[in-house]
Length: 119
Image 1 (cartoon, one colour):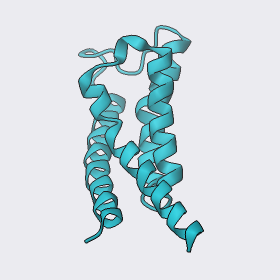
Image 2 (cartoon, helix red, strand yellow):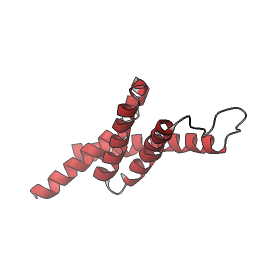
Image 3 (cartoon, rainbow, N blue to C red):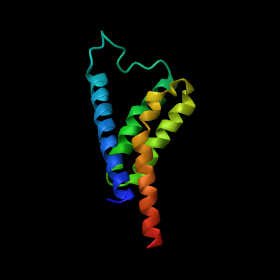
């Protein structure tokens, strides 16, 4: 198994795990009992934009990465970077780990593109 295939499968496995986790958390947030948690009550526009960037755009990016790794990885990584720019208080180790599948998809897409271009 060459490096490109190993990178692709690593990205898919980690991306699938993160995607399942994010969808599970999103469904829990949307259907949760509002008396126990805030649910989807946003304090301001910055919170709404942050929610759209993560987890919504990350879910979209990781889903697209199955078919188009470069596009999906760029969306997943770009939305996370924009969120960290918008909310620098969120830069933590666990949050940085969540960007890893998008980075792997992005690198895989770039390698795949360069291989097609050089052939």
